[in-house]
Length: 326
Image 1 (cartoon, rainbow, N blue to C red):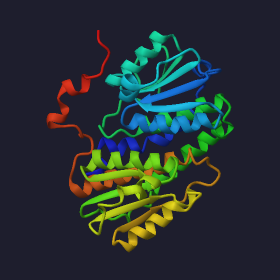
Image 2 (cartoon, rainbow, N blue to C red; image 1 turned 180 degrees about the vertical axis):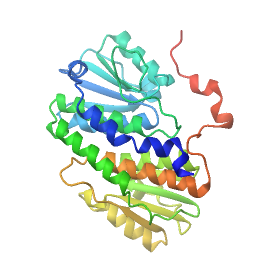
Image 3 (cartoon, helix red, strand yellow; image 1 turned 90 degrees about the horizontal axis):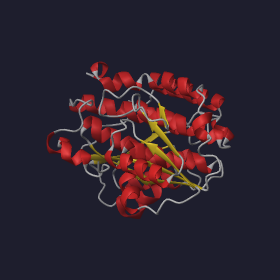
């Protein structure tokens, strides 16, 4: 089943897409962000995770960068003001609340940079990859992260220079060839992924992929959040995946793994971040490993990972709520 899914096929295109984008010139769009006192990055679902990591990348350039869900910013965000800029992340260029945020930014007269898939036609957009054939999005996410890193490099974060992005592409290629996930057991009930800092964002993205692809109950947490109450319902029927515990400067991720073992939870570790890569760029190969794990779980459960949204959840009205009013 795995070799016949669009998800499987697209996962294997990501290294090439990252390498291509690593050599692209985004300086014209990046110039829109130069001098901004505050950059707001917004997205929905997977794009929200990209916004979170993108804000961390921009912060490495000394910029006041903040991320928000598109719905949260559209309806509850602080008013846009002179000196702000916005980065809108939406692979389809159709996501309802993302469209509203972009319209609000354009109406406020602030600089906007969008990151979309091919075909948006927006003058402010970097168009990364073709529209995903699987509803479990993969290449659009890692491509968006590559663009965000390139923009951050233009703004002064040298750790995301083109050479670093090309090394990231090769790290993704290596992980796709040998993901090292065969020992991760399919859980009897649910599975949690935890990590510190950027690995906490990747934990949430990985859990989302597992839910979408395999219809398995999966949750992703920042290590601190897992400790503060979220671990309570987990027990011997559940699994726990520790993401790069060596990257946690306080040792909390590893300590939580030990506590989980004592509670009878099956614990697995995915580590081995590529040497010489920024922790933020290391999220791309880790994400690819989790995408492949999601595809493997889909095969185990005999689920189609390319069709995630069905039944009442696919009702068109749900997907248009929050869109700009014509």
